Amino acid sequence: MSLMAQSPNLQAPANAYRPHLSPALMQATPLVVDRALGCRLFDKDGNAYLDFTSGIGVTSTGHCHPRVVEAAQRQVGRLIHGQYGVVMHQPMLDLIDRLGGLMPDGLNAFFFANSGAEAVESAIRLARNYTRRQNIIVFQGSFHGRTFGSAALTTSGARFRSAQSGALPPGVVVAPFPTPFRYGWDQETAERFCIRELDHIFATLTAPADTAAIIVEPVQGEAGYQPGSRAFFAALRERADKHGIVLIADEVQAGVGRTGRFWAGEHFDMQPDIVVFAKGIASGFPLSGIAAREEIMAAALPGSQGGTFSGNVVACAAALATLDVIAEEGLIENAAQRGAQLRAGLEATAARHKAIGDVRGLGLMQASEFVTPDGAPAPHLAKAVLKAALDRNMIILVCGPYGHIVRMIPPLVISADEVQEALDIWNAAVDEALEAQ
Image (cartoon, rainbow, N blue to C red; front, top):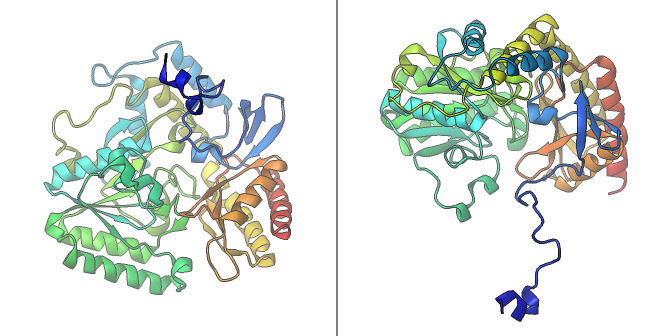
């Protein structure tokens, strides 16, 4: 007789052995989606939802843009998989040429992967190969991925670094990022503090001669859509040049037109040595990569780069179509214009509700931070607003270490009417949720 049969307390529920997703995957909504188009998702009953998540910043040209669909379908009929360590394929070669004209000056060597985390780890390994140093400086609030190596670089939430998963890779040092609202300071004071602390870190935690790279998001994502600043990034560049440290820009969430510039770092005249990209580059197909200075990429150890599905030909074809749509439909300009419209509406809502302590972001990457009367994080308010919005058929997400910041990242094809529709829903949802507290 089995142990389960002997012990009624161990008896499993009748459905315990049904196939199911891991409970560690945190579902933002209960929706089961059947199809999507543009800025709308449709559930299995045909109900339409205004999607202000873009699959967490992925569907840059909207859901199922006809030109992206056609490019992918055409490619599937020609070649589905041409492993680029074995053979080359034209879509990837064309993509290299296209991206080369969009990168910051001097970044002309490329490696392709599948996910943002994979590309981040590739950038870190490359920086260590190039400098022959170990240590990496990241910033408080950073998010660079969930894989074991990238989790060591991530500080946006303790859940990503839990000791229950074991010790993370060593050599990572955390520096402060200029977050004026959290510190209660103005921008200049926050910048001065963070730059001073970075120099202190060089004196106390990782000597410049031991530091391989500084990796930073031009706009922090999971921490709450906090932009950096021109002065801060200039200070990083100065110290990287002085000490021979590689400066890496993680543009995974903020890049590819999201902020009203192709790269978010352009807002700050940022000049990185490596750019990491993913998410919106292929409108939903898994593709990521890094672009580096030629002399840096040349230092990669043989066999240190690769991957079975990296640089997939269908994903590359979708990426080329994505770049065509972004350029020909003026989506970067649209992101700037619609982002300004969205920001103005969010600020107007915040002006009516003291529970919204801060509104920030760039372009179509905007966030509203919910706080209690004494300024503490208020995740219960953010959660209530999300539910009220979903009840009105709009999907939004939270972020921040406490889940108290609501972020909006609609597709770059969003129209003025759709932004206004979203703002009308937002106002009603905020009013309902806060009045119920």
